[in-house]
Image (cartoon, helix red, strand yellow):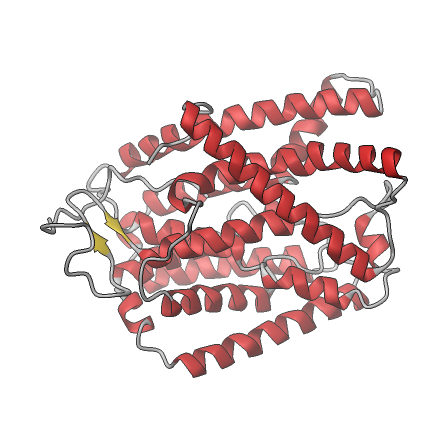
Length: 385
């Protein structure tokens, strides 16, 4: 997730004494230059865990992963586990919009956009360039392809649209739309228009007969959720969310989670889609927004993240967790297979889930350690705030 622009907050209220002095649990913490919302860091932290988990898969011996899953008994356990964290992407956009509404954009919104572009683009371009180079080296070592212009183009296209690196270009497009039309962000008509754009992407990416697209290619598919985040902040809906009945909200969340899994099961068994847990499924969009509301309602005070620092580390984890998934884990699995004659390919659902969880834990902690090192050494252009 892109870093929070702490230099652009429009709140100048000073709070005497300590940072938390006089703060009621669940309310934003104010300082002279910025406002810290406890639930933002909570959602950012959980969503980052979810993103790493969703991207972590297992080796299937060169076979198509979706095809393998169709031969696994009780695959619904695996799909249910995946669905748990499918709120992450939409929650990222909601948080981005919410924080955007807290900025001083003023009469020159594109100046703000260029400032954000400068902060976000440099670490992204560096990480993306390293990833492309690593893909080239890895493919040359493993399959020795003919490296020509067409191969490089296909490699670039794959990395840009079908790996985790899709998010930042999509985010910047969404941000440009919101900033460019910022004077309309309070309008429900503008939000309604963006909602219908999202529904269009939902149809063509999930429910049309084509079924060949992915949410990662929905370039304008998430603008609505960035707008919704802005609208929630502008209309102070957080204070209203804090008064929602917890039992009622929990019941609604459970119902939508069940419906999301039922839709996944239907898409998996009765359509030829390769992405039955697509983020843009209608039920998953409802699930994501409900999770967002639920986490706001649950967060009564600033969480203690221990050794983790979501505000500083989230963006770096997003940029570098893919390296462990694509390169480190396959090399480790290959070495373990040779040394201990342990096979990782399996049609056993319990083994699939176990290996997925082990890979996820390794990937998340390794990514976090790398990001902490980069921040300490001030490498990779990662923001320090």
